[in-house]
Image: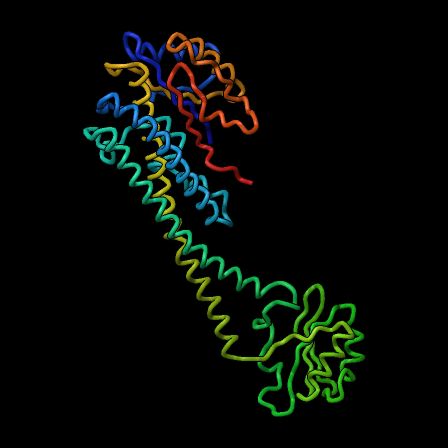
Length: 381
C-alpha cells in the first residue's frame, strides 16, 4: 500500500507544460517521486460564495468518508479472522487494487453527473456513504452478536474441568438414573491426587457404593471421576471431598438440556457460516463504493481549492505524486521552490516532522494545492 500526494498547480501556457515541469523537477533528474496525471472533468464552478462554503463542508465530508472506508476495511479484516492474508485481495476499487485505481483515476460520470452543481455532487456522495455507514453498523452488530454467542458456548465447552460444560463429556450410561435412593456424582480430582482418590473415595461418606468410581475424562490438570452413593449422604460426601481437595461438580444428567445445548451450538455455527459469504460480498462491494466516493471527494476538493486559489478561467493541472519514501523532505523542498511564487506566505512545513500533541495534518499549507491520499488503511498488528 502507498501514500500519495494529490497536488495541483496553475496551467502555464498549456497544462502539458505544467506537467512537463513537474516531471523534470521530481522524476527525470532525481527520482523523488513517481507521478501520474489526475484527470478532473470540467465541473460547474458556481459562485465564489458557494465555493468558499463548499471548501469547509468538503473537508468534513472527506474525513467522514475516509473514516467509513477504514471502518469497512477494518471490519473486513475482523470477519476474515482466520485468513487475514486474504484481506488485501478483497479490498479493491472497481475491480482493481487501490494504487491502480488512484493512479488511473477516471471520473464516474454515471454516479456523479458533472452537469449537477458541485454541492449536489457532494450531497450525492454524502448520502451514499452515510447509507453504507448505517448498513455497516446494522450488519456488524448482527454478525458480532452471533459470533459472541457462539464464542460463549465454545468457551463453556472448553477450559478447565472445574468450570467447563460437561455435556460433550458424559454419557447416559455413566449415571444411575431414576433411582429413589442412589445418585451418581461427578468429582474433579487433580492428577497428583489420583492415588488418594482411589484409596479414600469409598470412606468419604458412610453410604458410598464400593468400586463405583470411573474415570470419565482427563485433561492436563486432572480427571473427572463418577461415583455412586446414597442420596442422604450427599452433604457429608461433599464436605469430606472438599477437605481432601477434590471438587464435586454440581451436575444433573438431563437429556433434553444437553440436546438443546448441542443443537444451539450447531444452529449458531450454521448461521455464522451462512452469514459469512453474503457479509464478505457486501463488504467487498461497499468498500469499493466508499473508496471510489472518497477519491471523487479528493478530486472535488482539488477542483474547488484550485479555482479559489488560482482564479478563473479554470486552468490548472492536477497531479498525483507517489513520493519515494527516503526523499519526502527533498520532494517538499523541490515543490516549494517550484511554486513559492504563488503564495509567499506559505511557509514550508516539514511533513515528516511529528510534534507530539500537535496535529499538523489540519495545518499543512503549501503554496500549491495539496491533499494526502493514504492507501495504508490499517496496520496489521
